[in-house]
Length: 122
Image 1 (tube, helix red, strand yellow):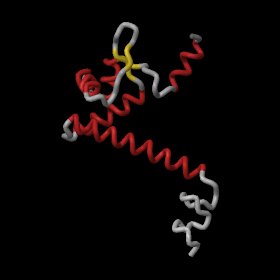
Image 2 (cartoon, rainbow, N blue to C red):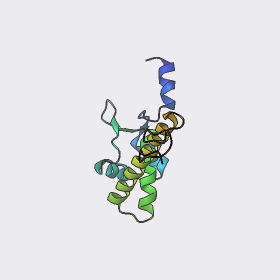
Image 3 (cartoon, helix red, strand yellow):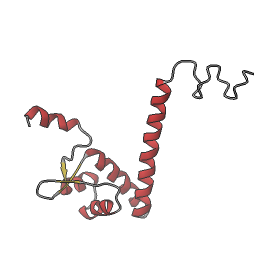
């Protein structure tokens, strides 16, 4: 791997760049909290060749959101479910917006050019 390839990964949100200790420090949580998120399957850290957990920036954003909810009194299992649903909603909205942009002008989303979805033209 070249140095250029390594530096390119710095912009990759999914690159597992952070050790467990550093990740916990960055989100203001304990290593135990990160382990609990892994047990709840909210995030799945990659493992280094030595077997150590490594976290990406994307995973840290997810973990930080869960920590916010837990800090407000939400049980960790519920916080994980909320974060998963928020993430799914964000992805669905992104896909929906992209589909709207890709739709030909004058289409109403149902394949009708007049905006009338009942097909009678009235």
